[in-house]
Length: 97
Length: 394
Image 1 (cartoon, rainbow over the protein chains, first blue to last red):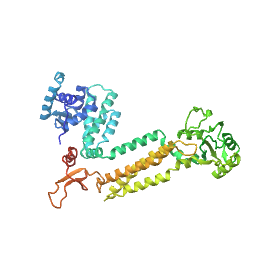
Image 2: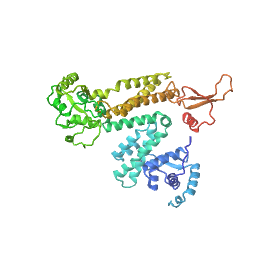
Image 3: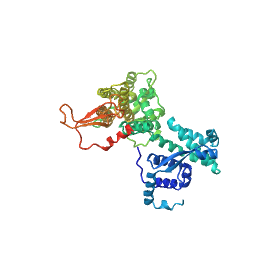
Image 4: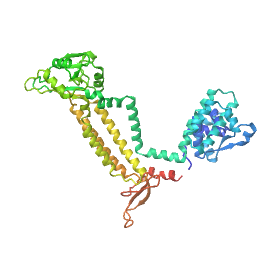
């Protein structure tokens, strides 16, 4: 059952980070400057709410020789939600891509 | 292979943290969760020069993440939601708080020492009669002091100072006991303020093997008791402390047994929960009461002041009675099989709709046992109750 999500600035920031190409958990942490203990639970919550989805990235793992990594991408409701959040928090737009 | 590469590139401290955080999760969720965190740390470390401290700092977030995942795991979130709804949660929290506070402040030890300590039976008070109309029908302090100094039944307890009309003692054990009991003897030699109000009687200690009757007889022979004077009684502190134990204890035991009577247990599990709930509730009342008993001050008549007597006898029985009423009412709304509260409405009947069907709400527990029909259909059913359905059937 999709979880109801609040229109918080943190969720907006994380959705914005994903929309600008920060797909991995630690990249989102670096981009937003939020601690890992905030970003990961927020990512789970957004995923439960159906605003983002996660996929295991095996292709890049084979190329780099590292372990497979999980990346996050926006879903259609997630894009709509981000649109609403950008209207509410105009500063989100000003964060450099 | 990739996992080996992964693990080798992550500092030991971060791996330990991830293992601890991952330990919170059920096995089926843990594998993916650990892989994600290991992979992120691996790539993050490779992308730039990172100190072990930076990696450790970032790994700390794994605990918040694991806790969040755990809370959203279906079975566990249901149990947590049940615990939140349960009325026993505040009681359990209160019990933990009380026990923690008492242990931390040595409260229980102090109470037990006064109630059941060996010295409690040997340390005694001299129950002096109350002065009436200016009379002084009490053994003078100097005579009591002489008795304690020379008697064969009582021990000398350190330095005595006779300060009319009080005889005080500087024995460390006695001072500690009396200080715990907030019954501080008035005595300059133990640095107590002279205006301290409270117990103003005589205390002493029986010699090993000496009986109370022997001590009383000896005092009678030593002191000059005028005609019509009452022989002062020697009352051990232990006896004073334990005086309310029997009547109040029996009353509380009876109330606890009566609280068990309306139980509708249909299984051993339910019975165990019910009995432990009743026992814990009454143990809490008894613990609070014993703390109260240990804190009661003494009077010169070797008793406790009237207000304290009321507190010691009436309060525990009143608290036990209220607890009994609450437990009886609460037992009605609990499942016979698992003792969970019957809160989920499954059928709403309308009064008079069917001839033999009573109107009302039939409720089940969250494990789908039991049924409770509650009176009539209310005008509005709270959304909180109905919102449990998605959780149960998710």
